Image 1 (cartoon, rainbow, N blue to C red):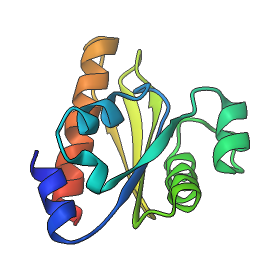
Image 2: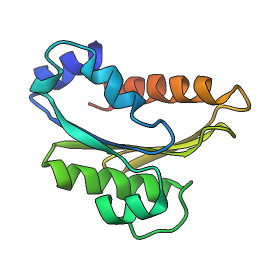
Image 3: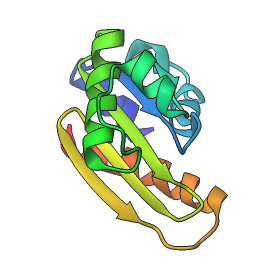
Image 4: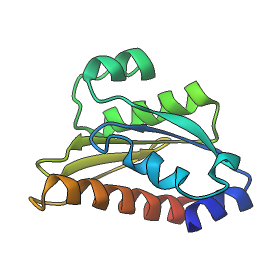
Length: 133
């Protein structure tokens, strides 16, 4: 996977906080041999309480770039990684917010179906990370 190669090349570590994708991004990483060299770990924080208790977020709006940013910063601190990424949103509506450390973006994938939104979100996050690092 290109993302893992880039992280290894740049000697960067990554941790992830996922909500609406339910760990699909982390699963994509760990399917690749050698992912443990750069992937520190992650959290599936599906409920608002989990976001607050596990990641220290302060905003109540689960579908916002600010929530994604706080999740990314929280998971980065929790795992001591160079990069923290986060995904939160409404998979059933196709509205997903992403963060890489302080950078955020929102994507509206439309009404393509829950599983397709999850897959598209993982693909988007991997591509965006490759562009950013």
